[in-house]
Length: 195
Figure 1: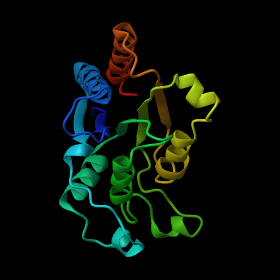
Figure 2: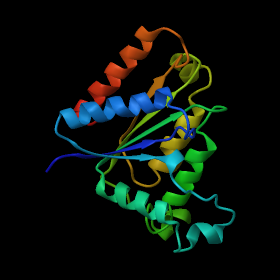
Figure 3: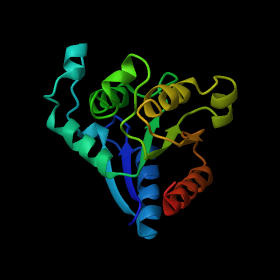
Figure 4: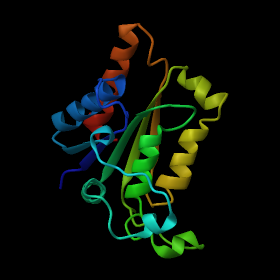
């Protein structure tokens, strides 16, 4: 059975193509070239309402795009989440997506909130690709990659997703095309291996 990949492109701009979009295309090209099954979601194109209460989060009446995203996650073996670093962490649209999609009963059982419990997405792995204006090493060593570490530990691993790997695509706004090209090639290579 072929490894099934779900690419979740999280740049919130629905009007303009950004480097995040190019990275998603590169990963998909590599994965499909290796014969892997690939699905893709673009958060900016989805209707993801903001949660305003715990009752909303626990309700069984999720929006159709939320249910479709859950079904795509359920089918996938490996998730690839791509987004730009905004104010040290993920954009609000990505956080809203995760809050809506990773609900009790889908992503983790009820006991997980009170103590020992289980993530219901066990058996899935993830790759988080974050673009940023600063050098990736600066984000990692000076800032401690706090936004990524929170996503990895408190969201993805809590839901049972592991291992979680990352790429910090630094200087994404740089005008040097050779740096961007190297990143596109690296991400395509990761796609060809489904990691």
